[in-house]
Length: 80
Image 1 (tube, rainbow, N blue to C red):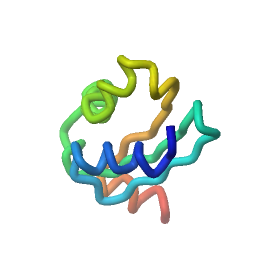
Image 2 (cartoon, rainbow, N blue to C red):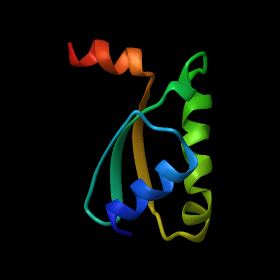
Image 3 (cartoon, rainbow, N blue to C red):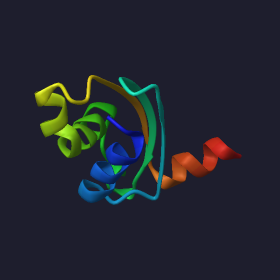
């Protein structure tokens, strides 16, 4: 699966302030920054991202994705 397609799916299902995605075609790593994560714990944030990709994960088209989920404030603080 192409990284641009994964980004499109995430953007279509989640309002992202920032999205980075790297991968080798089978395994991907992402940083997802969204105001929707405010007040949500880590598991709730991950569930929200997985919702945007459920069909591709269930079909096996997308094999592995690890990600970091941050609010805009957390992202800003991380970048210094």
